[in-house]
Image (cartoon, rainbow, N blue to C red; front, side, top):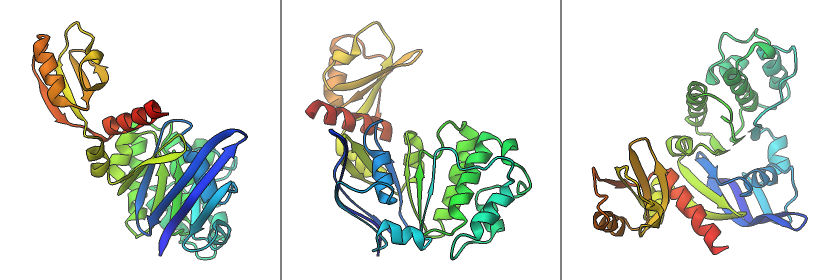
Length: 293
């Protein structure tokens, strides 16, 4: 049975169409990243998925049931970006309270271990670091042992070390065969942690596949050379330019044409050509969508 089935889902805020005809299926056990620029429709889609917004058109099914039924059965949990921590409460207090709410919860000690919070059960929320507080929100979401965990920008504002610890905790939970659906602006996180990438832009799905498939779809490569005075953006095939201290890195949809133009302009110094990463593929996809709008 599929964990998530969205069929022709749409939503509008007045005259603004936030989500437009989204159809998406997530198999049980998948870890799926939802990417997209601000205003792409990511958060609105997740709210409809959780049953917190009624779709204008289309249907949402979670494990074959309505969102309300799946959530009430404890099969679905969500982790917000912020909030949800009661002042003067301890880590253990919050988890023990939620443990009593769900029909089939995991032991509090297990939730603490999965979220890398063992030893902090007696600490009040005011004394938690930003990374620890975010891992507590994660523990609060998973203590009910949900089959589907939804994370909306889970590592926003965390430092590098805290993000690494969070994703290690998420992977420990996903390795139990659970389904995880998360949105993020950190493309490296999506590339490293997701089995599958879904890219939204202007309320529509514009790409869906593994990270490797998304990269191959756009056919872009990176071309880099030693930096010289020149307007690299006008070269054929160049879709984006990044200026580093001593190098220029170009995202190109036609690397052969770009290299030939560099040679003709006398700019072919210390050339490197490589396959595009997820970030370059993502930027190319969203630029193509905007140019077609």
